[in-house]
Amino acid sequence: MTGSKEGNDARTALRQFRAIFSAVRQHAQWVEAQCGISGTQLWVLYELSAQPGMRVSRLADALAIKRSTASNLLDKIEQRGLIRRERGASDQRIVHLFLTEAGTAIMAKAPQPAQGVLIDSLHRLPPDKLVELSQNLSSLLDLMQLADNTGMTPLPDI
Image (cartoon, rainbow, N blue to C red; front, side):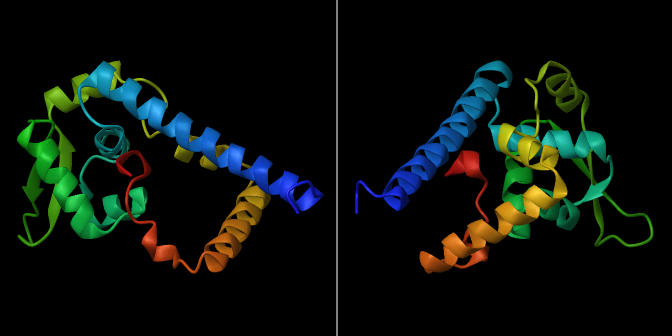
């Protein structure tokens, strides 16, 4: 079977996955070298610069991660003085997120795409191709007996 068309197609797909993971890893390393923060942390800053005052749940959704993972990321970024949290005036349970001057400065010098090469490329795919890709990846996850919710760790952090 290794010489069959299916075997060749499988090897081609495997090489493509490797190229994608390598590009994500290289971009994350470049971000860290340029900005001193992880690619995922830069993605957080990117989202907050695009939507100042965003709430944690919305950020988690934008990054396709669990709310608890987003909170942990925010703790690290806040400790570095790159973001600030403000409680809502009418409801103290609501927390809004903003970049600090230091966070804005990092965004100004950040390598592009600041949200990462993979999500940027996914957003640039035509909608029909993105749906097709999603369906095909779901089929692959099914064959691997993995649930879609197992992919909640940011890719640069894997």
